[in-house]
Length: 276
Image 1 (cartoon, rainbow, N blue to C red):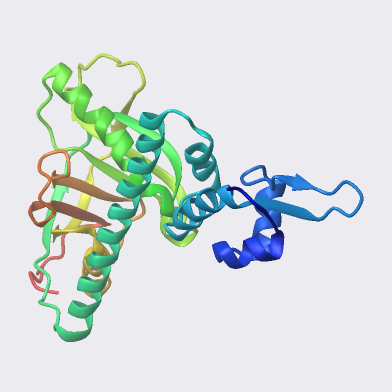
Image 2: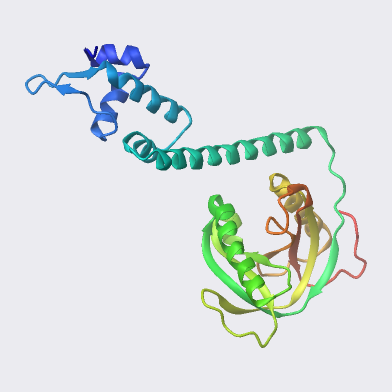
């Protein structure tokens, strides 16, 4: 038997505050069964408790309200399950990031860093297919997944064998947003490709350190390489380059990732120190 209850009683039943219930009503997520036209008092039916508890669980999982609305209002079971699956996948990814950061923090606090092996190299100018964008640091992961997925597809279609990379402007580091150019080296005679620029990257001297493994410790590689450059080299103008020797497109095993971080310098030191 269905009964109606006041918003206060419904709040106690569902552990949702009256303020939250009013908000859900205002946005059309969970409307009361009846609103008194003269007093504005709201009453809910007991059959709505299940819906309210579902909403509460989904919000406990930090599901966006738009997705909660899609789950609650949909009569298509497969569509509801797909929305739930996509959100759970996002949460799993966030949990993995948290695990990686915890592991990195423990290592930072308990392990003395090994001296970085730094190599010096002159990289000649080269032509490349590229995607150029103004990217926020917080969005760089998703941006790279999209852009390098497209570059990988282009490489496969045109049988290009080359190490992809990217350049990062100073603003990307200092302002948390700046120009990023993802590139795939090609022959000087390469023809244009839809959706990509043909760019000519300048040659130059670089101090190069290799980052191995997951990205959670990437800042430690930058810190060690940057310190080495400051102590042993003269910095040259120009963006930092990253070369993705072994990337997520090559293997799902994060421990196998290898990224060369290339710091621009004016010249190779006369007596280069191999250790930072």
